[in-house]
Amino acid sequence: MTPGRYDAMVVGAGPAGSVAALVMARGGLKVALVDKASFPRDKACGDLVGPRGAQLLADLGIELTGTRVGDMEVVGPTGHPVRLRASAGLTYPGFGFALPRRLFDLRLRTLALDAGAEGITDRADEPRFDDRGDLVGFRLASGRAVDADVIIGADGALSRVGQVARLVDDGRALWGFAIRAYVDASPPLPQILFWEPSRWTGYPGYGWLFPGVEGRANVGLGVGLQGDRRAGSRAAADLDSFVADRLGPLRLRPGRRLGGWLKMGMVGTTPARRRTLLVGDAAGLVNSLQGEGIAQAMGSGRSAAEAVLAAGPSGAAAQYRQALARLYAPYAIRTVPITAAMLTRPWLVAGAGRVLTAPGLGRLLSGGWAVYWNDLLEGARPGWPKRTARLAHGMAGLAARGSGDRRLILASLGGS
Image (cartoon, rainbow, N blue to C red; front, side, top):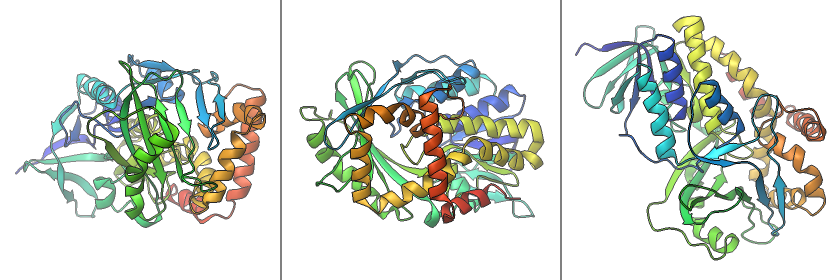
């Protein structure tokens, strides 16, 4: 069968893949946007898009209707709340929004198709390589062959593209697993809830209760792992206990609970080599401290597309790695070693949760915490919160110095 030939093939039509396809199609490229699912489809997610994601959508001229959210409340393991203020920065607004992924992803994919990308509902099955051994396309499950000058893997944490292109080392990755359901509630603020299943044994992750639409809130639990994904069932098993312990009278709505893997902090992944680029979760672009991934997914999708447009197939990988080194690596090389260290020390997780939400101290630290935890230091307005966040950034850098994870991340951005 003669393959269909494209300038770019994007595997995965979530936020990362759809934004990449949109930007390349607007730039005049012939783009295949391939996803195994028929849209609309749902995804395991908190359905919350932060300030950087909201700004990126505005930069692309995309308007979405969702529930606008601002401040966030973090509830410590002892029940004490701390309010993290959503202050506008110089390069991002002081708000985000909540929108179910089935609606959010459908809208982005539709915009990419309207811009000229070709939507293909099929599974990327058998990889196709050229004489040099470079990935050039896939034979789809239907038997159709699709080749392209550039392949962009936007197919999630368990990326098929990353695997066949030999860009991932699962054993070195920093994994997480999250499960979400819905409850009938309208919380005034998004809530992050630290949890101790037993006293001074901090859960290696957190739970959440986020506003939704039509009186329905998103509730979930995320757990950090390390290189061993076998422990991923823990969050699913613990969700009911978490809800009963921390959310009291709320009851989960009947219906399917969705779980999904997270790959965090870029470690264990080479984001680009030759003519294959990974974006979003496929590249490990999830904040290892608090699990946000949508803004990074869209940002990396745009950066990958801009690299393809500016440098062409042969130069896109190097330009894309440079963009990631500038946008995400300074945070990841500091926070990944800290996250990895905490995952094996439940007492440290418990202590951090108690200190950060302690009366008085929690309020004093909350401004800088809101900035640094959400990776908003770059572009924050001058003031006490930014100074506090910069201090945390410096201390994290000292703590991570000499870390093997730090070296792995920096090495993955060198590439060839």
